[in-house]
Amino acid sequence: MSDLIENQITGINEPEFSVSEISNAIKRLIEDEFSYVRIRGEIGRVSFPRSGHVYLDLKDEKSVISGVIWKGVADRLVTRPEEGMEVIARGRVTTFGGQSKYQIIIDELRPAGVGALMAMLEKRKKQFQADGVFNREHKKSLPYLPEIIGVVTSPSGAVIKDILHRLADRFPRKVVLWPVAVQGEKCAKEVARAIDGFNSLTKQNPLIAPDLIIVARGGGSIEDLWGFNEELVVKSAFKSAIPLISAIGHETDTTLLDYVADVRAPTPSAAAEMAVPVRHELLALLDTNGARLSRGLSQILSNRSQRLLDFTRSLPRVFGLLEGPTQRLDSISVRLPNSLISGVRLKKSKLVEISTGIKPASLFMRLENSQSKFKLQASQLINLFGYFIDLRKQTLNSFFSRIEGLSLKRDIKREHKNLKDLSVRLKKSYEINIKNFEIRLQSIDRLRETLGYRQTLDRGYAVIRSGDSVITDKAKALHLSDLSIEFRDGDLPVKKVKD
Image (cartoon, rainbow, N blue to C red; front, side):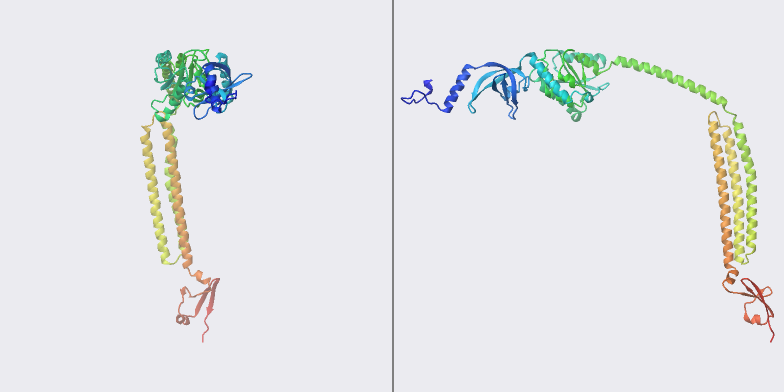
């Protein structure tokens, strides 16, 4: 190592190095000795800074070595590093002089066999179960007949051909293919992006937005199917608002996507069968139901026709139903005018009795006018009632020829109601007119009492009479011998004493 020393001090055996010199010498020595190695170990601490690089520790029962995965390599990793995962890392060992430590620059990182993958799969499964991602209440029902089906799979494989062929046989539907890698380092990201993309179409472009998503892939090893076990795929499927069918591998293959999907299909062809019904079966069912509906309607119409005929036979004769109401109508039409005339006469006699004591000429005139109006209104009321009776008779007679079948009972009920309403209205009109005349007579009588002289006597005045004549002048009273003074409570005779 003498070539590393530029200036040696004479007399001293130990060479002198700077810190950088010794650090670089150790770095070259380790890199030359371990230029490319494969290390098997368990991942300890893992960190993912914003730079995109990955820093981790590889450990076994006794030792720990730091590892670095640069961003370009981290983006290509098939399996995302997780703490506790047993892996095989391939890379070169070097030193980091800034901290006096050695580390491995990892170029490739894979799980250490199927056992490691299964252990990691079980760990993820338990974590998602604990978070409730697989719970049944989150499952969505599949649409019975989707208009558009979105398929997430490889465009070049046999899976898409099987799905299209199966859909064409059962019920042709529109299919939108989102091409993805179904294995390798790009698989998980592209599948998650496809699921999110289909969901975004619901708002951005509803015309091509699918009603159902099928994520499909053929069979393969656990390493080939590992992309469908990644966390970002599970989260995208869980957040999907569109119902999702998982059809990954064969029936014995199981991924985490199968647990989070709304429905799990054993094969891609089975997913197509779950997505749509059989068109021919639906047409046959439609024909069967149509025939049953026709037979049912025919049977119902036949039964109703028979019932209608039975009801018609049990109905009474038309004229028999009208005989009673017609007789009652005739009886009312005969009695009502006489009743009105009697009522008018009674009120007239009462009016005459009341008006007998009224002496002012104006009161007699108003009373006579009221009587004339009352007679005129009574006559008009009788004529109007007779007109309505005749009109109703004509209406009933015209209905006789038009009444048929089931309408008979309805028409009779309606005419009976109209007749009853007319009687009620006529009675109300009569009562209102009589009440108005009574009120007017009472008003005239009060006016008579107000204008009469007896009200004046109650206030302390008196009336002087000579026989039947009222004396209003003093000069005239001086020449009369017999006078009488009428007070409120009676007459007082006055005898004039001669001078």
